[in-house]
Length: 317
Image (cartoon, rainbow, N blue to C red; front, top):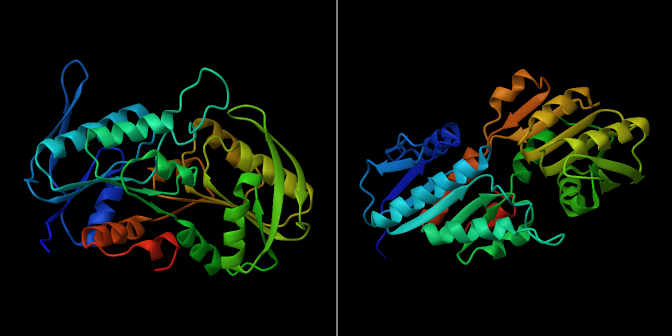
């Protein structure tokens, strides 16, 4: 079987993550020049020969979401027209994932639109990390390798050797995730009933499970405005919880989140570097950032070698 050379490119959304993945793979990033025409249009020129190669493009569609998504599409089209043998879009954070259904009349399903654009632009497969909903894989008409950073976060939490630990699902939708963390950490499980008031505010109701005098871990796929995490932390503290730690794969951390989180009774906030977040430590002193470059790099290596990566799905390395 012919094995095509591996080339890894990085868009402008997260160059630090691209560099870390390439260090794991022990190779230099592919060379490309990204600039703008005077009217603001973006253009990409490949400076590495990609004819017949196995190409991976690392681009998180985080803020600015539209700009990073369009840059990814241009990159994919550029590689397709340069005769790359296979093109994989590595999307550590997939923007627009929450717009995955019509929850009211006259609204779009933008997650499906974004998936269609990525396929049309030239991607042969997608590698991504902790989609907002796992069923988004079905929006793509190409193979999707959906990894999770749960083991990365769970390994860190286990190293803290916390006693009297309860994993709390901050809402019903996180029950399965919380149960997996509870199993990995050997902890008890509790659930908070949450009601969303609007896009940035939630109301936390009752707690199912024992939290008084317990140390708490809450894990979600992302922290965007901080409404869910902060509301849950306030309720848990009112119910007599001890140390409270919040964790999430994607630290989107909007301005509103950076206002709320320092005021919440949280001892630590854990996120990964799936999106650029290091600069926000200046505002959020209790922020811990865990790396996912090794996880993504190993997935890239296995895809390139046509090896199974199902053990990475399951969090076993």
